[in-house]
Image 1: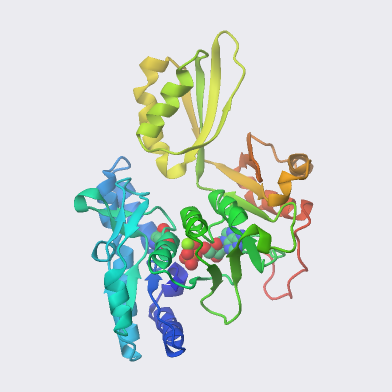
Image 2 (image 1 turned 30 degrees about the vertical axis):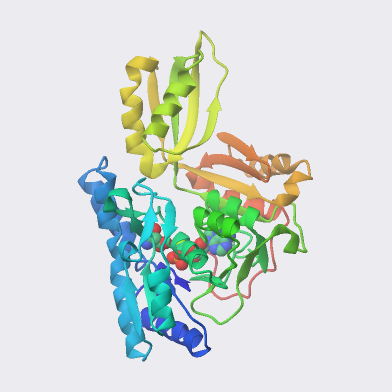
Length: 409
Ligand code: ADP
Ligand code: ASP
Ligand code: MG
């Protein structure tokens, strides 16, 4: 059972989580629990680090941002004890959850489950800190934002759990973020492939790598509500899905920044030098366009995570002499909107439908990228909600108007 930030946001909610864990234990299940930090806690920690030094040592970043989960594991273990459920907290290094040393976005290499299994056999519920592990050299590491999902899925695989239940503040995976589109529909099932693609383009409901690991190790994942008792969404193999839509979801990511390197030399080796240096600095590059050059120079546009923007600018500044470009323009006010669906493999025209829907709303497309089951566009961040709604409608995903409670924002 994994509980996200809003599910452990205060003591009442932690008591609610403890009740849910007790219920599973009372039903005769052996349970291991993973928790996130209280909602907002990690953001605050990240902000402190960045305010002090945007070019901080990533190992010290991890030391700071991993602390949010230490608070909630202790509190939940206490809350469980109060309900008469024996429980014990575990930090990542104590388990241990071993990771590589890509601090700030480490990969899980191995989890030694023996100590946890021994506790569970003795009737003690392990409460494991999400998001954190221990890197080579015994330093604290973190798994990237939203990484508690990965902790939970990787732990479920290591413990050979029957199920990995991801409890959150929505009751499942929807056709798009239900906070933006009121008429989003809940999916009973979604395929690993589609969930992976949706997560990788921004649907925060599950972290990307958690889906990757679930797919690889065949972990049965369910996304469900911490607050309501109803079935959630199951993430399953594609052949278990009956209703196949061309587009099954729309996602957005407001965490990217656009960089344009103006008038860089148009010759072999330039892209390799530029993107090689970024890779060396552990900066992930997402969309890339290179324009046809005139006068033997060209403009190169690409996106990176917004958190990596200062580091990217630093790397580019160091390449100025080698690459001889004219200038670097950075634009963080962009949002990437994506349509995802396995049906795209066999249907033409998805990109065209997308571009038409956006143009009808007067939304300019800055960058485009596609994969086998996805089309993504980069637009100005002001258009985020309008674009998501337009595409949700254009692909026939709108459900019925929800029963009126609050008015639209
Ligand atoms: P937690 O703190 O429990 O990990 P997150 O905030 O990381 O929760 O993820 C849940 C949020 O994901 C929801 O509140 C919702 O706004 C957002 N979300 C984005 N896309 C989707 C989607 N397609 N289906 C459901 N929720 C989504
Ligand atoms: N607390 C971490 C974060 O906010 C991990 C998580 O919530 O999954 O990113
Ligand atoms: Mg999350």
